[in-house]
Length: 358
Image 1 (tube, rainbow, N blue to C red):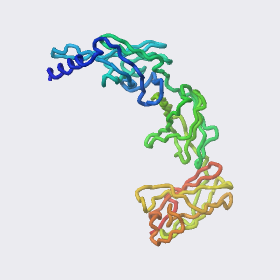
Image 2: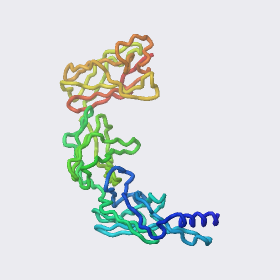
Image 3: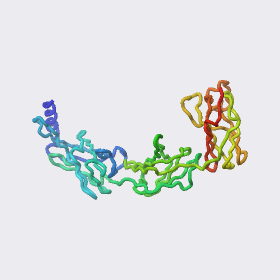
Image 4: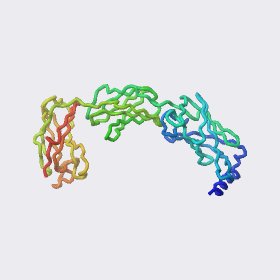
């Protein structure tokens, strides 16, 4: 395999005018995480073991074969350097030649080996071919610090049936691009926060989605260029509890919907629109438990609600004329969820819930 390798290296020299000292041309630097953003942004932290992968675009990038006729042929790649608030030359093993128009580089950070914490700011990037010739591109790279979270507050508390406002304060937020923010808890899928506004580089306003399960969550914020910060045990979601709840009647046939009364023995219902769900599977997807809304939910008094369990209709539009109730609820005993306009929340466990009989 030595002769073919040597021949390939020699052909690279023979076919390229740039090996005679023709300078390269540097047209741009790309962060693949934000291909349309110029100048490219990169974080001076994180980046995995090797750093952040960036792409150099241009022409006449020309490696130089070394020791081509020996047992250990090698290639000397163009040198890539950064100058700005601090100066840095990329290690040779962090450079990768793709073709004369494209090179890739892994930019080290404070968290990599080797490590290098570039000062934030604008950088000129230069590429120098082994036989001479240098190209520079001013303001080709913007180095930014990682975001920092100093506080997280829910100023209005938590509301089960509506989004709960959340304020995140810190530094290094990107007002020109939305970050990815997720709630994280062991044993559960990450919960992204979709509604958010970057008020400034120190303040973000967002919402905890409705029906987020109670518990303590970590929050991870990731800026578009890849910088991320995780704050463990950052947020405890808890709803004001309703009192002990019961449902009567507590069963109904699968072949017809059933009107029920929900009673609170403790904290009072408040006037307004209530949401009530039966936590059960439907026949169209019997392996998946979902929240099935009861319909015709009506406030009666501080201790009672009226509603109808869709044992036959499930999610289907009423009236259901098929006597087999193809979209109805699978027979079994299930719990209920009740939410109050005040934001309070209560459950009826399956052990004392509603039974759909065959």
